[in-house]
Structure formats: structure tokens, C-alpha cells
Image (cartoon, rainbow, N blue to C red; front, side):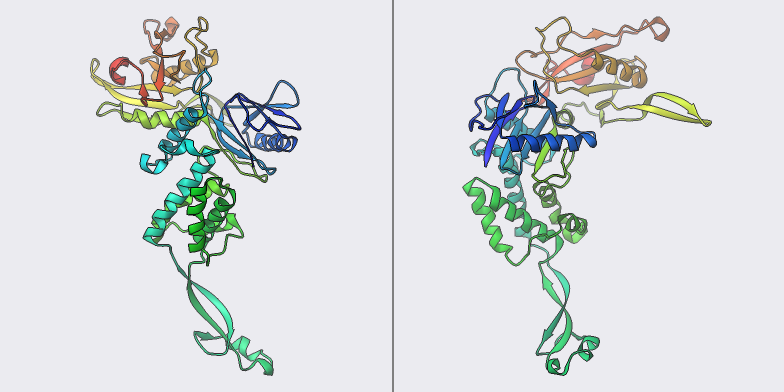
Length: 444
């Protein structure tokens, strides 16, 4: 197994003799077979509207986009992609710990179960971290008890039990009349859920490079020895039951889907051989901020994500009004404005980009992002309230910028002065850095 670790926007260069240890997280060398696989996988995902790679400086280079996770190629190359949360080069352990913390929060894992303390001991820790989560979920499941089920079976025996299959018995030749054709039920653990768990155990035993994880997986391999692995993974997932008696299987199902390459939330996955678990960092950051902001809201305030009640335009066709270009701000807060004694709305949008307060007069902000904020403010708020852009905090963006004023035409309400706030989100303290003020108090 050839393991490399890079971060977002790193360059992957094709070479016949790749270096085993890549000193930089922004550049790595990969084999021609790994390069071809990544290129084909990216083309396949492009047809689905998802791409995680761009062409680099020449035809022998690929550039990673803003995706994090793990890609495994059929030739044995495993690429770990970590978040680029600072403009300066940071060590792998810091980036890895940040990714695991965000995934643990978004996937609703407790700190005790997420393995944050031991994550930097693994050679390819993100992959091993997924394995560890599965084994912890399996331990809880086994303590409660695995489910058995009755399964019909047909047998030829020398004694009679169950139900005699008279049709088969009559059709037997004389030389076989001493045997009984019977049909009966057996109480077995061979059911779809347990077959998928067995397949995950086999996968971990085969792929893990950590001795502790291998030992734990091998213990369950022996305990599930009577359960055959899944022959048709997709069909077994369709047969997975979610009734009351199977409620304790709900947690492990998610990790089975990840390890066996099934669809997981906001991830991308191709159909080609090899496993890929990729999370769009923009979506991961958005969800993480949403969860953390819930702890900063004042009493009575409500937070809603991906509100999609308004459209940018509409047109008439066949005497029917069609709405197009749905406007979906990342977050919207409804709160009580004390000064006006009425409810107001505050639109917030997250951007996983490293802006630089020392870069130029625009601070590295994109004009298209400001256009987007203007549309949100006009459609959702009628320019009656401010709007917020949230970026990750780092060395070159340590505090909120002075708010920008929208240039509102007089016919739209020129006396109004809505502001665009550009505020950092501290990923260490897990909160908006707004000087200790409340969200509604600052933007009231």
C-alpha cells in the first residue's frame, strides 16, 4: 500500500518512480496507474455534475479541488486529502484533527466515541478512523445482541422433522425412498444486516495497517464466523430492516455504507473499482457552522438552513408562471428586534475560502459573492436588515472587517443602509469571532 497525504488544492504529478514520502502537503507524486484511475473517476463524476480534480499545469498533473477525505486506487495507492484551513503550511496532525473534529460533529458522534485523542497515531488515520468508528458501533451492537431470524430450508434427511414435502417425496426414485424430503425453519444469524457487517469486518481485517484495529476486527471475525459475507451488497442494503426490533442496528448501518462504498451524506462516489470517501469542504464547513451557531443564539431565536422559498426570476409560458433560479442562503436566523419590537430575519452565508485582510482593497473577496449577497438581501429581506458572510479564521483574517454598505438605488429605498458583515469563524473555539457580542445584538 502506497500512502500519501496532501491538502486541498494540492498538485498530483504523474511519474514512473513516485517518492514514498511527500515533504509538502501541496504536492505529491503518484504512479501512472493511479493517475489514470483518478482521471477516469473524475470524468465519471463530471457526468454526474461533480468533480474533485482539475487539470494542472500540464497533462501530467492533476489539481485537487476543495474536497477532503480518502481516495483508494485499484493499484494500492491511498490518498488522504486534508483541509487547507490556513495559508501557512501546517503539520498533518493539526489538519487531520480539525477534519476529524468537524466530521465527528456533523456525523453526530460524541467526543468519547470519535477517537480524537488517538487519531494522530495512525499512518493513514482518516481511513483508520472510519474503521475505528465501525468497530465501536459493532461493540455496542454486540453487547445488546445481534438479531437472528427464521429461515426456511429444504433438506433430505433420514429422520422426519418439520413438514414433509409430499410432492418431492413422491417424485423420488425407489433407491431414495429411505430419505425424507422435509421443509422446516432454522433460527439463524444469516440475514442481510449481519452479512453486510461481516463484509465490513473482512474489509477491515484485509486493509487496516493498525495492529490494534486488526486485533479488534479479527475478534469479531471469529464471532461472525457462521455468517457468510454479502454476495450482493446493494440488494442486502435494500433488505436492511429499520423496524423497532432493529433500532440498535441504526448506528452501524451508516458506517457499513461508508466502508462498503455506498452513498453517504454530501459525499461523492464513483462506480469504478476502488473506494473513495470525499466530502465537499464547503458543505462540511456550512453544516459545522450551523451546528455550532445553535449554541450562540439568544432565547427565542430560530435558525433555519437552506431556506428555499424565493426565486430570482419568473416567466410566463403557456399561461403558466414558471419560477427559475432558486435562491438558497446557507443559514437564516429569525429573531426579535428589541428596538422595533418585531421579528426580523438575518441571512448568513458560509464560504470555505481563505481571505486576506492584507491582500488588496477587496481583501480577497470575490465580486460574485457580493452579487449573491445583494440578491439574498433584496429578495429575502427587502434591504431591511444586514447580511453576513462567514469565512474561516486564520493568520491573515483574525477579526471582522469593517462592514460594507450596500449601494441602494433611491427607487429601491436609498435611505436604507443595510450592511455586509464579513466575520471569521474560529474553528478552535467553535464560534463566530464578533467580540463577545450576541448575533442579534450586533445586527439589530
